Length: 82
Image 1 (cartoon, helix red, strand yellow):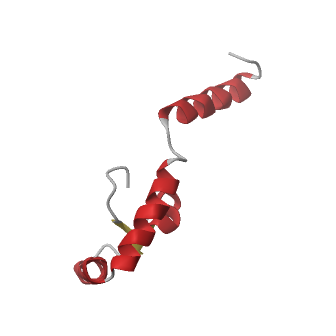
Image 2 (tube, helix red, strand yellow):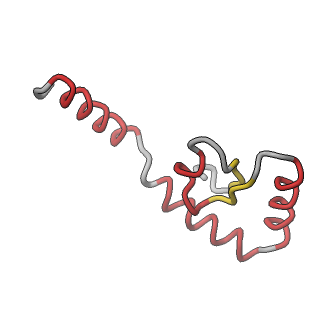
């Protein structure tokens, strides 16, 4: 997503939560992956939708926000501000 490309990801683990609706989520097997690649090659509209959703999705993930959230967790665990 950050590279500005449509994404195909596994529908397992944390990937669906991370990718949201900005990726084609498939079973991690050859057939579904090949099918998803075919869809991306054939459907320009799908590529455009995924690119736009990807741009919006990556805005939710940045290092400053991750650091701030991590500090908050430590503060809650310690019971006081760091």
